[in-house]
Length: 65
Image 1 (tube, rainbow, N blue to C red):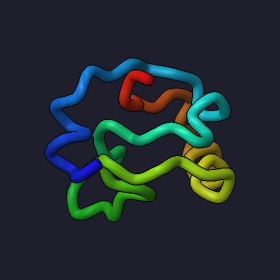
Image 2 (image 1 turned 90 degrees about the vertical axis):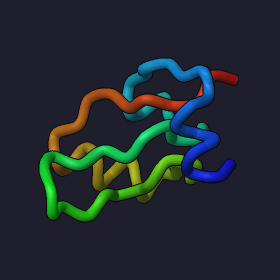
Image 3 (image 1 turned 180 degrees about the vertical axis):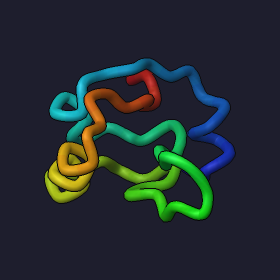
Image 4 (image 1 turned 180 degrees about the horizontal axis):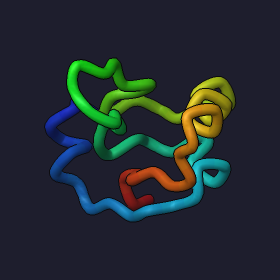
């Protein structure tokens, strides 16, 4: 999905660990000029989950399946 498509697609909030293999709906950054781990439209993988966990994220908004 393109970033805009993911941003406006129906989405749900799931636990970070449950987001593996799902498409991120919106970027997660604490505040500008932070660099997001992933941007909307990218697939969440195990590597991203480890980074999200490191920074204390418990949930992510992902595109509904």
